[in-house]
Image 1 (cartoon, one colour):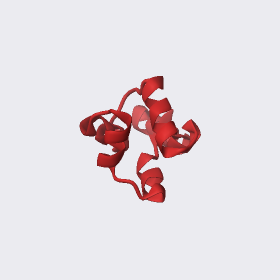
Image 2 (image 1 turned 45 degrees about the horizontal axis):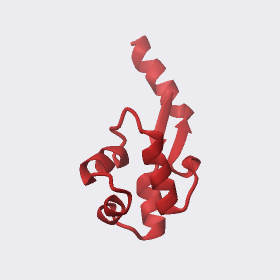
Image 3 (image 1 turned 90 degrees about the horizontal axis):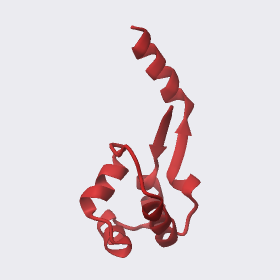
Image 4 (image 1 turned 30 degrees about the vertical axis):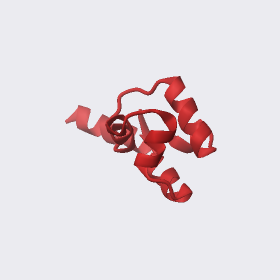
Length: 79
């Protein structure tokens, strides 16, 4: 199972920088960068709520379930 974070796409659509978002939601730039690059292992609901509120979007706009990544993981595990 692979869940991708599409924060970069949403920020581009909103013409908002990661720095501006960081200031608005009160989450460090470093933590948002980890989330944006897909390196995060978890996200708090309070953080997700703050992001959705500021970006005027739904959680599904930020998180996408990627079934192709699941197939790739199976191939690596089988080798």
